[in-house]
Amino acid sequence: MKVSIITVTLNSAATLATTMESVRRQDYGDIEHILVDGASRDTTVDIIRSYPHVARFISEPDQGLYDAINKGIRLATGDVVGILNSDDFFPSSSIVSRVAEELRTRQVDAIFGDVAFVRGDNLDRIVRLYSSGKFHPRQFAWGYMPAHPSFYVRRRCYQDFGLYQTDYRIAADYELLMRFLHRHHVSYAYVPLTMVHMRTGGVSNKSIRSRYVLNQEIVRACGENGVTTSLARLSLKYFFKVFEYIRPALRASSRLSGKKQRA
Image 1 (cartoon, rainbow, N blue to C red):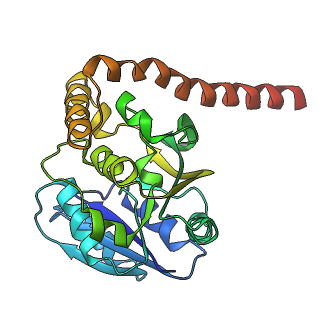
Image 2 (cartoon, rainbow, N blue to C red):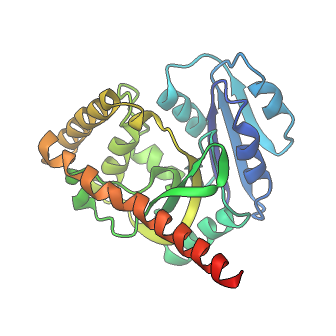
């Protein structure tokens, strides 16, 4: 089973090496790493070219993140496709092996797991945990989706059900997951594994304006896929997000307490 991993870059020199190394160190033997660069002006292209494991690479202007991801999907030849952002990385060398094994043994078309958010100045410090463990397609109406960076799906699903809609600014990933999992009932399984570490500071959470645009697009995505929702309903999710920050804080406090006791 070939696994295609798509990484999109644009002036990503500050973080890209960590991403590239985490793919290079995977112990799975059949990975196709595809890099789609948006004509970077820094040293991003030089970094990409320094990694011989890269299977395909293009650098040219694009129409934004989702257009670039679509280019990568069109280039992919793997049985399975996943996306690893240029400021994200795999936390261990066995992630792709686990992806392939889960898809093989569970006989589903898609899997997803959990992601952890880490500080940019300390990649070992987890500040937020996003678990997909309780996801059900009915939760799309409430603003919840599986952790997109942990989503791996058989390539034929893109061929059958379409790519990312590039007229979305922020929520094209939400719309695609809803289209696949709710509208077309793509079979899936949850894997209780932290599959990706993400640096904090994503586009959808940069400002109140970004959150407003995100929720407006989620309302639109729900309408296009036969799900009833509202901005008022979506706003309730922010209350529950607090718990995503509490768990890492409690774990850190527990570890600190254990160290003091041993001392």
